[in-house]
Length: 112
Length: 117
Image (tube, rainbow over all chains, first blue to last red; front, side, top):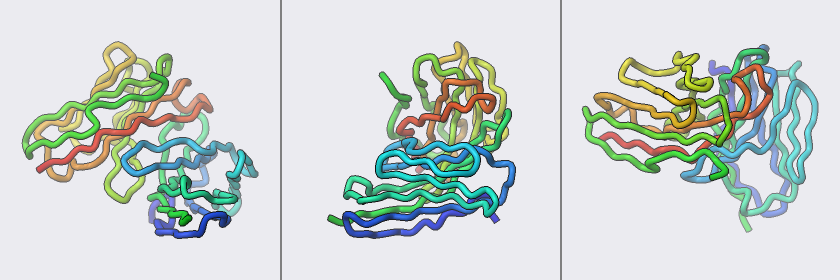
């Protein structure tokens, strides 16, 4: 079993839909949780960065972390065709632990 | 530039050749990371530099892989005697702080897509 599990999709939704993306993990030492967006042939772009459990909102994006369930989510409201990309969850431990562990990524297509 | 810059963007090499991949981190960023991303997978950690010191190379797949950052800014990832399984996207990331003791996030370049024939 990999440390971070993410359904690779693909996920296809109509424009304006609410999108829910999620990851589960097994390492209880993870404390920092990130969502990156990766367009085709581009590098990962940081979307959300959260520490420990709770919610964080930034515009149309909301990140949720539930450490007790080892489950993180990213919600995208009013999805747009420009949101079509691969979404990667990533996480790392606290203290001196700098290595990011990524999920496989979920390919999202938002249809106009 | 404002972001992490990597060159070349694409590299094709024959099996057995040596290749060198370059990374220019964001100016002032102390930490630099290399990741390998296979097709359809998330990035996987290769190595970490704090300034010019290579503090962790535990993710390098074999001794054919070598990375350096001699002046604490630009970094080069070198792969000797390339094999077909080395085909992947090689991503460089940098962050402002000193590795894990900072809560600064890692910012990625667009990568070098390496194809070994």
